[in-house]
Structures are given as structure tokens and as C-alpha cells.
Length: 110
Length: 145
Image (cartoon, rainbow over all chains, first blue to last red; front, side, top):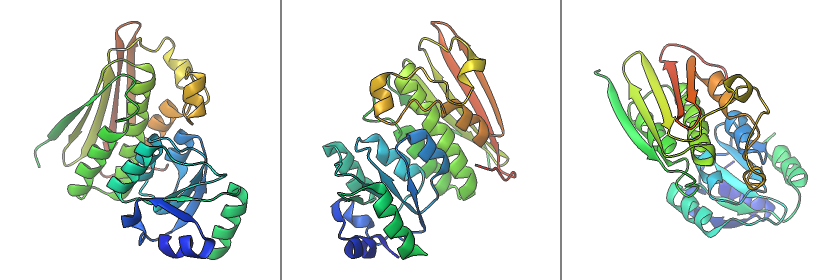
């Protein structure tokens, strides 16, 4: 599945990094501690987090992520969006909980 | 190939550009067709080292040296130094501020992540003088993450 398909299926709002919407999703990861995500997130994953500050994009780039999904109604800072555009990694929004979204994505990828 | 060496500045408290040196190193390794797994290990170590300098250190330098056999990553700063290196190497130990913790830093995983993802790591630090960390990564080895 590519990011665009996931966004359409689950009605996720695409806020930045549109250029990366055709990235392939190979898995997912949930976490808000950056070192933990940096150490364990798999390549090509979608990352579900509440962190919206610009440092999340360095983690996304270095881990070769497909997209970052801000959950729980959180939104990214303006410079986070700019970095997402520059790196071509989409930032998507989900108003509900990470648990709820992770379940849906997992079911979709299985 | 002859050893290739590049250095990048890390600025104190500069959260805006934090991570960019590591991204440059990653892109450099990618352009040299270095093994993807090794790039990921170097990326983790570079990022953690860079964030440590931004959060705790002073002005810093990240340098990378690449030759046929290995990648050497060195991160140094002129900050306050690490008081107890053994304690700092323990998973979960952190001196991050409340604000940094809210941003998802300060899990106390930085140095342990660096040790786990490199083949060899040395930490030298002197109070009020700064910290130097050197990590090597063998091109031949398979590293666990």
C-alpha cells in the first residue's frame, strides 16, 4: 500500500510532504520518545506520534520512513511542515487515538 | 578508495538544525553505495550524538571518515562534559530538562543506542572542557539494532 491509498482509505488529512504520497508503506511504529523510535522504527514505516516539533523530521529521514501521522488531534509546527515538504515525507493527521489508528493500519497491511 | 573525511558544525541549543549533520552523512554514505544496514547504524549514532551536543554540550563538530574497510564517526564539543561516564552509559539515565523530555528527548537511550549500533566506541570527557566520542563501523560486519 502507498501513503496516498492509506490517506484516502482512512480519511487522513495530508498536511505536508505531498511529494512523498507514493511512498510504499512497509510497516508501522508508534512512539513519542525519539531515541526509542530512532532505535527501533523499521524502514518504510508510518510513524504514529503526538510529537509535532521539527526534530521528528530528522528521525523520519534517518529511518527512511514513508510518512509521519500525528495522532490525537496534535498538529505540526510550521517549520516541521517545511521540513516535510523539503524531504518529501508526508505528514498526515488523525484526530483519534494512536491505538485506534494502529489497529486499522495493521488490519489493512496484514 | 582513499579515506574521505567531512566535518559538520553542531551549534549549541540549535534545535532547528539538529539532525542535519547526520542527514548529510547519511546522504554521503548513500552516494557511496555503502550497505543500507550500516547506513542505518551510522545514522542512529550520528543523530544521538548530535542531539546530545545540542541539548547538553557546547559548540560541537561531527566528523565522518570513510575508507574501504570502515566508517569512523567522531563527535566532539566544548560543553560542560560528562561527570560520570559509566552512569551516563546506563540505559534510562538522563540529565535532560523537563522541556526536552516533553519533546520526546531524555529517554536515557542516546549513549546506549550509540554503543549498540557501533562496533567500537570510546567516550572521553573532562569537566568544563567537553566531550569527545569516537565510533567505528566495519564495512564487513552485520550489526544488530
